[in-house]
Structure formats: structure tokens, C-alpha cells
Amino acid sequence: MQSRKRLNFVIVLKADRLTYLLLLILLLPSCRDGNVSTHTDESRLSPQDKYVPDWIPPQLPSQQLYYMPSVIIVKAREESQQQEDEIIILIKRDTINGIPVRSSGSITFSEELPVIDEREQTEEAYYAISYISTNRYIGVNFDNDIFNNTDYYYTNGIRIEYIASIFASSPLSYTMLPYRKYSMNYHGMTFVQNMFTPTNPDTINVQDNDRPFAACLYLGHFKNTLSSKNRYRQYSELQVGLIGPGSLGGFVQDQIHDIPPLGWENQIQNDLVLNYTALVEKGLYNPGFLDLNVYAEGQLGTLYTNAGGGLRIRIGKLNPYFSMPGLATENSTEGSNGLKWQYGIFGTAKVKMVIYNATLQGGMINRSSNYTIPSEDIERFLLQASVGIYLAFKQLGVMYEQFYISPEFKNAYHFRWGHINMTYCF
Image: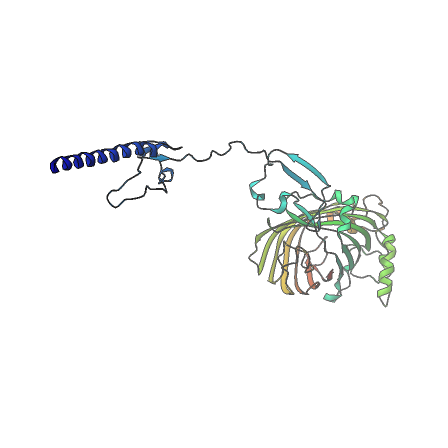
């Protein structure tokens, strides 16, 4: 009886284990059902493509269950291969950060970026490469040989100049030399009167083999271009006026001399002055305290026709030569890093080839002058040099320069004269 009960218990126990086994077999396949795909080749996958599930079946004390598929791949979201076309708007404006520019206002739509020269890729010049300075200047220049205790040849000269952005709108500005790269430009007007006398101005007689009396008076429109990036300067000026008694040279000398010169009756007669001046200058060595530049210049017209070139040097605590014309206001673009005090010395040396000089040879149109220097007596190659000192405080600058020029005609003397400049920027 007891053995029969024991047999029945063993059979039931075995039946229960079989049931548990069947249940486990049924449960495991259900764990594999899901929205993931399996792959057995792990060599084709990078570590970031492998996925370890966060869920692990609960563990029982008598057994451990594992959910370990060989490899699980989670597909990343595919990004759109097509992107919206970008439209670049190129704008040319009359001002950039308050600085006037020459280009007229227009808007252009383009589907691709324009090609920019490699040297200009880092420049603001992408939108406007030619700026007009907002600074205004008034300068007074005075030349006289009294600084060398003489009273002949180039005896007196005055030049008054005014620089303002408004002159960029003048029709004459289109006659100035263009510069298409990054630059700051200064437009201005000048008023000039120059006077020349022989070595003895106190005689009414014509003095052969000497310089004739001459005076000229003209207005000029100029443009001064500075490029700090390229260490480059470009200057051009158009001059219109007259040479002769109408320039009032004799009248001015009468007012400043105790004994009026008598020889103005023999001066170069009235004629038209129409001249153009051009200069280009390039920095050779500009470490900051020193500027060494080379330049070439020329004049063409009824007053002067010549060409030449030379060197310029500056030493001292000075604003960068190619960033501004010496002075600038503190709130301007070029003057934001300007010096409060400036001081230094400078010098120039050049060789000039002379083709025509109306103050010696008379006007090109009116040939009625009593006395002129014959063409064969004109010295065609001249040496000119200068040395000077400069001092400035904020927007006010003062300069003194001493000039030398070799004889301009046969039997002439070497000559020197002084030059004073005072400029105020506002």
C-alpha cells in the first residue's frame, strides 16, 4: 500500500517537471519575437552599431535565464540627401558701417558664390572694397626761400587744401586714378599760388642767363588712395588755372616786400594751366617704427611735363603710413587705433627727367613773353631731395621740411627752400 503511494508521488513529480520544461520551451521562442532583426556576422558591424538590450529576464534562485541574441542591429534614421538650395544675396550699399562707398545701391540674386581672388578672401572687400574716409582735413602749406636767407628762384608758394567725402561726388572724381582693391580714399580740393624770380628781382631790365619772373595760380581736385593690406599709395590730381600776370604774383610780392620788385613787367605772359599729376608708392620695409618706400611720379600738361622716382624714409613714433594720411579722428575707422602723440623725422630723394617747364620756357599757347629760357639750356635731369621733422597731437599735425634741387638750367645755382605744413583733422 505504501509502495503504491510512493510510486504515484514519483510519477506526479516527474509530470510536474515535464510541465515546467514544456512551459520553458514555449516561453523562450516568444522572447525572440520583436521588432529587431538579427545578424550573425559581427565582422561587418562597427561597435556603435551593436546594441545591448536594457531588459534581462528576472533571475530565480534555482536557475538563471538569459536573453542573448547573437547580434542585434538597430537601424539609424536615414538623413535626407537633398538639401534646400541656398540663395546668396550680394548687396552693394552706399555705406558700410557708416563709411560711404562709391558703388550705387543694388541687390543681385545668385545661386552660387562668386569667385573671389585668393588674396581678397579674408577682406571686408567682399562687399565693398573701396571706402571713402569720413574724416575731414584742412591743411595749409607755405614755401619760402627766406628759411635759407635767399630771395630768388622759387621764392614763395602757398597751398591750401580741404579734404571731405563730399568731393567724391564731384564729376572730376572720375578723372582720378582708379584702384579696385581694398583701400581707403581721400578726396579733396586745393588752391595753389607759386612765384619765381631771378637772382636780382630789383631791376626792371631783362636779365639774360637768369630765371624769368613767373607766377601761377590754379585750383586742383585730387584723390589720395591708401591700402594698408598691400602697403600701397596712389595719388592723382587735376589742376586748372593760369600762369602770368592774372595769377597776381607781382601783386602779392609787392605786399610782402618793403621795396617792391621791379621786374614783374617782364614776367611770363598769361596762358592756360591744365595739368595732371599721378604718383604710385609701394612699401619696401615697414616694421612699425620705420618706413622705407619706393615711389614713381609724373606730371603732364601745359605747366609741367616730367617723370621721376625715388625713395622715402620715415623714422619715429608715427601712425602707419599706408593706414591714414598722418591724422585721423578717434571715432573713424582708420583712427580707432591711432596714436595720441606722434613725432619723427623723414627724408626723400628722387631723380626727375624734365620735358617741359612753363615757368622757365613760357606758356605752350601764348608765346609772347619778353624773356624765357631756351629749350637747349634746360637741364633735363634733376636731383631733388628733402629732410624734415614731424610733430602731432591728436588731430593736429605740424611739419617742417627743407628742400634741395640741382640747377634747373645752364649757369643756374643749386637751390634750397623751406616748407611748413599745418594740418587739422576733424
